[in-house]
Image (cartoon, rainbow, N blue to C red; front, side, top):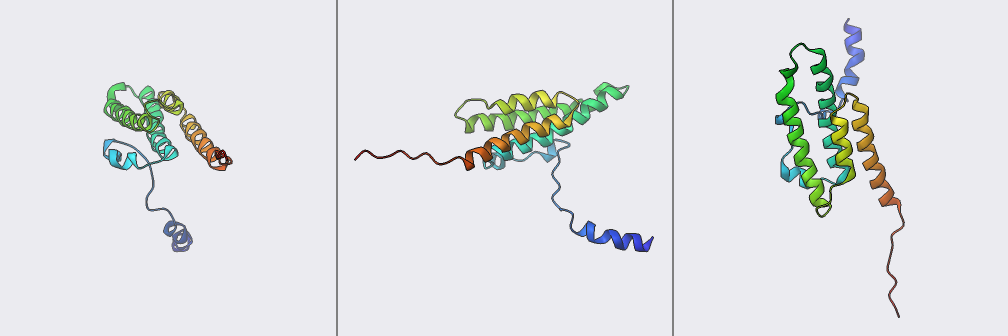
Length: 140
């Protein structure tokens, strides 16, 4: 047993201390923190909530008391609303498509859908960074 624990020790030491997950309202970031995030960071934050909501949706259907997690679902959707408002503000009042996609995914039972939405935002962000810069030529 001691050998096994010694074998696991290096793996435990290198595990990240700041594991990101959302399980309830106390895990919400402040509006100020969210406003400093870029598009993909906002989508990733929404993904954490979305993943939790898909698990809760599955659990609600399996329990005899479907109201057991109602507060968590309400808190999750409330937090997603805050994230979406900030994303919309960053887009000059236009709602980015990913927010609709994430909301749809959060109401399902497949957390992979949440990740797909977040990855699509990352792909778009990386496309934008790798695209050649467009410079306007000055007329001479």
